[in-house]
Amino acid sequence: MIAGKVGVVCGYGDVGKGCAAALKQAGARVIVTEIDPICALQALMEGFQVLTLEDVVSEADIFVTTTGNKDIIMVSHMKKMKNNAIVCNIGHFDNEIDMLGLETYPGVKRITIKPQTDRWVFPETNSGIIVLAEGRLMNLGCATGHPSFVMSCSFTNQVIAQLELWKEKSTGKY
Image (tube, rainbow, N blue to C red):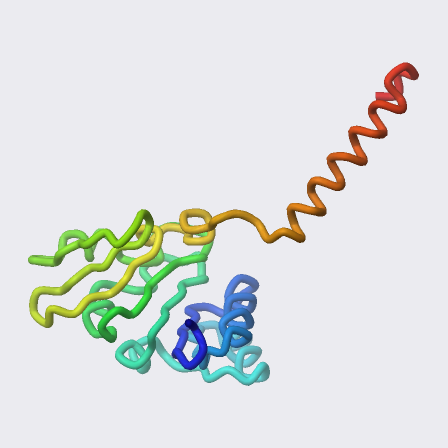
């Protein structure tokens, strides 16, 4: 579902690098927005196009904020996005997407598709955007669990620890 889409990753720090790589692996054409010249150069050297958000806001299908900074995607940006563009945040804080501006925009209509997935329709155009996890961290709000490999490692470590505790129960080692 991501292949062929245009994904914008706002920020190319540690989180942004991983997000850009994941979107690229899923087949998206990835564009990076970055204000730090060193991080922008790193993105270019990895083969990503680096542009401003204003240059791509009307072209992209998926927007992911990864900066940890405030006011990255504002309601003025959201109004210019394609119909049903997806907007989400995996940055460090919950203030990267202007949710207050969106919620208080005159005449905007919120349609809950499912928990943590809302479509916001602007009255002037009758087009909307899809916001995940209400602008909060989507990897916490929308996650459905850990990959099986992670769970296998975790459970294996727990069993090894239990065996060790049982083996040493009478020695007072623990």
